[in-house]
Image 1 (cartoon, rainbow, N blue to C red):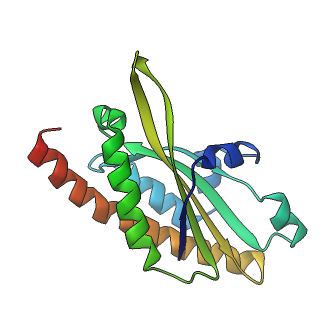
Image 2 (tube, helix red, strand yellow):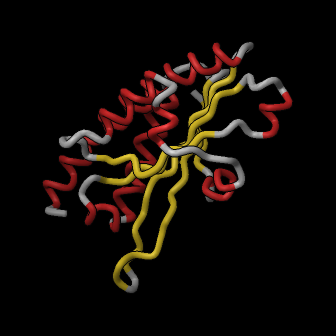
Length: 172
């Protein structure tokens, strides 16, 4: 899988029309499973937002790509203020996802985004993840995307085990 860390994925995602996670999940079984697993009560993460769009280039190609963007944070709110944890998350996700899938048909773009926190000088962070799959037909692109999403889910859960150990040993 091709993995790229970009400085501001949010700027590109805002330029595309998005849809809420409930509406997007209703159409894709893999997405339903992903959202249920990542947002479960024992998960280390939370999907804060899920949007999708077909970028203009894909529309010109007859919609032969399938793309979703996720905003992922930690389920423990205090961890969302720890920028170091997000850098560790970026590093581990990049390492794990590069080993999966085909770079010709699957692409993941990762970015760290920040919003002003509830207290001055205390920003809240999140991981923005965009998964895109290409295929010879829209159906093939969606199927490849669904398989790529399984890899993303596995990478998140593997990383969560490591981050749990790291935060419990440091007392974060």
